[in-house]
Length: 202
Image (tube, rainbow, N blue to C red):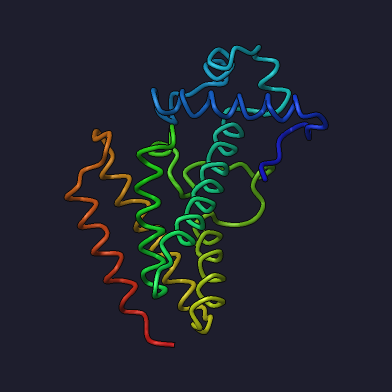
């Protein structure tokens, strides 16, 4: 759940925040993270600059909210894909996560620019740790519960490193390629699969 400067107490406030984050995603998709401004977000959302600052203290807070939403949507979509595809092993599960990452780059506006990692962060908004670590923790919980794998620091570290590798390599595949460079995606998938396969049996 994204926390913002003023906690919304009405549905219309929540809707306004979502509209601002949607606008930020569109702007980031067009001009990139570095060039996005709160004025651009306000204009795209059809709102005043004061409305933006009512909920977000600065542009970094807007970007962090967008980044957190992207992570939440990635995790939710991954869980849905896992339920649908029913992977037989925990490595297959992580490949579902990899494929979901690719899917998000193709369908989620601004995802290639904002990515899964800690490209942007804001202390007042994000206080729950490193993003890739949180994603790995979510996967570790599923793996230990559903696949009989004993949880360990090494497993969690491997999962986090695979998340970071996927994030970097898949993002590279989508630079200048709307649907992603199939060669890079295939190579990245092979690299991540091989890395996870080296985890000792538990």
